[in-house]
Length: 216
Figure (tube, rainbow, N blue to C red):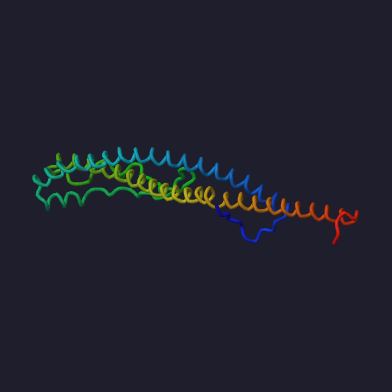
């Protein structure tokens, strides 16, 4: 098995101590990142379950809004329907900001309160509006749900990106940095042991030479 030695490392005892300290820090960092990754993955699946439910709710809301809108168009005619809708009060400003989920900035959509400045749509009272009123209420609810769905989708995308980044860091620590630190520490340790054996051999040889037990 080949070793992955960090380049430029001097095989000294001081460097060995530094490498061992780096191993402790790297392993602690790997442990913390792994915990963060596991927590983010759990949060991602929780949000995904929420997204599935909200997506179904949004689809149902738009499906419920279509029949009364269709009936209003049949009663009023397409042109009359478009004219009535043109008089409806627009929604207030929708705020776009950021929130934080698991340390990750995610989109935050703020709906105005109230959603519209007036309670009534704004078209003339003479308009045969029973079906249009129902469609108006259903469409407004569907839009609110769709905005909540968009916010949740943005959170899922950002969280998935952060999970990918964190997973790459965890893998880099586990598969590259930490093994290379251990290999480098082993290399320095082996080098120092070899130097110590050679030094012991030289001292023994010098002692034997001084005592006349070795002819040069």
